[in-house]
Image 1 (tube, one colour):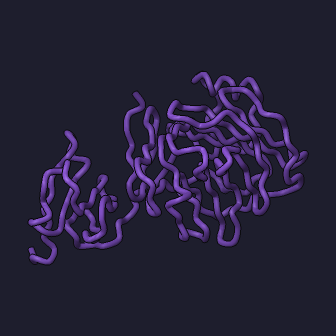
Image 2 (cartoon, rainbow, N blue to C red; image 1 turned 180 degrees about the vertical axis):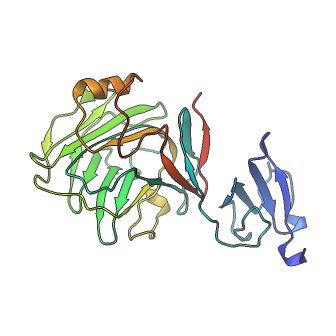
Length: 274
């Protein structure tokens, strides 16, 4: 092997799924010290620490651009976004096109980011528009945007303890509501007659300011997400409450957490939901 592509690596998980590598032998110091390092989750790599180590694949630096591998199924798993970055996200692949006139979106989420820090919770963008975004705003409100100005809700704050959060909207009346722990917010009327356009990109963890780009660390999600499900209709109150309590409900026909197809990029971990 060419010396220019040599790396010094160590497995740091029992199954060997996480590898820490450094380009230069003199950089190799105990992991408790501050050093320039690169972490690789399976086939995807991401930078950690200061900025002198080049991004490389597990194949010891042959490629500088990590390839995304489509995986399926996250039943009893949690996505952990441990750090603020401008490159870590999970791309979701819907089971059907996102041309929607109604939907229910549900997730369970926890974060320790301060309330004054804006957080992207869900982002769906086409080439020209932010089609469907859900945010925790800097003032603590939770917001929902469809291709333009948003609508804002005062909800119980997100915290280090997991919250169940659902959002319902339907075009015919514009009725919109968030549901926290199975309880509905006040309805607001938002964008009646609107249609969500298909053929976009869905991300967890980042807000793309342009199609497949323009990511900002200061808007990134840090924390845990699980049980992300989406339907192309509005679930009833009883169904949302059943989902909150972990009871059986119709599988999401856009996303079903148990069978969802997804691609990991950067510093995102998939761990058991224990």
